[in-house]
Image 1 (cartoon, protein in one colour):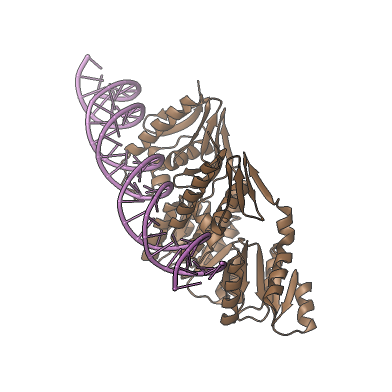
Image 2 (image 1 turned 30 degrees about the horizontal axis):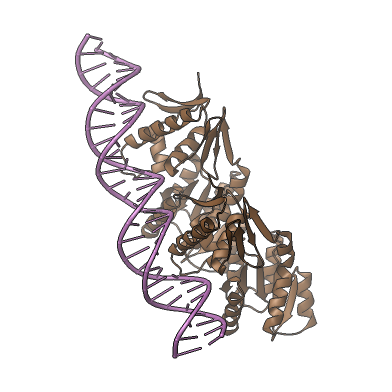
Length: 224
Length: 224
DNA sequence: CGGAAACCTTAAATCTAACTTAAAAAGGTT
DNA sequence: AACCTTTTTAAGTTAGATTTAAGGTTTCCG
């Protein structure tokens, strides 16, 4: 699940990123409204957390512009003041939910879950390609020959591959989406996980393989 | 059974929370209408007790907004004045029941039971999975090898697992559903209860196990 | 052909969520 | 007040996930 966090208070932002990553979200953090809009345009997220008070462009304007473009991305607004005006404006302007600072971590997580639940239900919960299935709710990868419960990182990589079959995904893109922009991890880990996944795919007799394209990345393909 | 209590008189609120918790409800208390709406957004409750007279937003408005969102959550209204007008307004606006202050504890409990009965009836009173049974009225967990009368928290955890067999339930979700948002308890308690339940399951020779999926949660599964 | 870059594989090291137990604390009962 | 049950805390342990490291293999290009 990919989230964008737009919050200008660096300290809070960092704390939130840590918490969210801990809970298996892939998070990109931005620090002003314009940046937020930028990121929202280019990338595809499953939800956004928008602070209302931000430099360059406030959260409400970002939200308005986002909705004007016809996006129905779930949006959770954060507001420092518990003023009615802010709240009502937030809801009227198309936010799905709001939360007033300060808030408990638990509550934030609950809100995010509830906000993205609808989406999770809509987007098919089981990815298929050839004879393999990947269950997004149980992390189960299965085919004729059996099944495996994938670990977290394994699952995220497999999900990216299966959501975009036959599409090339570069090592950098894996790193960026799963480990995050500022990760210290060696590029090597991607290779390691590709190796693990291949082993599992062949163990369950999958009709698909992960093909490497030297210099450009990996893609999920029909077995030749 | 999770309830939200919205009542601005602190003393009354505290008393009610105590009573309700005594009667095995998980209760979150809020002290004004906006907060109530806030908490209700997460859709996590089995019923709400709403005082009509509250700061920031009165109970009737909260109710109206709740119904506008399409929620059919059972609502019990509290009103200080025994005026018919208030009552009628309450029922018209979609409340399931009302109670005028002051009221007897017994009556409150009866009303809550009746309010949530429909919900309780729909759900079967005995949960089954494999060779194990969980009786919702006696808290009895049984299988070939014997039976245990579960304690409250144990029961609630087991109930969540058995109501959603094979589905992953995260530690946070347990906390949220059973302990409530603002609980101070360590995440550790969940592990402790999982451990207790496992011990009991194996003692009665259950055909099911509680499987942990590191980083994502627990699920009830067929014993391999 | 030779060598360098890219990729692969495995095993070992590390890290941390999950487990277990015991005991304290809280609450209720006799 | 002694006793019992339930809930929570605390602390030491285990095991699975992740990362590192190191030695292979393949592909490309001069």
